[in-house]
Length: 86
Picture: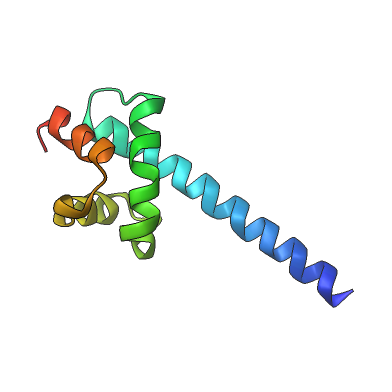
């Protein structure tokens, strides 16, 4: 019974993180550009997890973290910032 509870808790935690990240990426894309595309959100998702996971769900903190780590961003995510002028 305990194992099943822990499995369910893990699933809920992953679902919560995924929905939080989805919300962030939607807001981030809107802040980075008038309307971010799904492609732009996909471009930065790995960088958010790799460089700024500790900032989730704070959108401003994540955006600031990505800007601070600009030199470490993937080429795809860096181009999102370049397009937005940020």
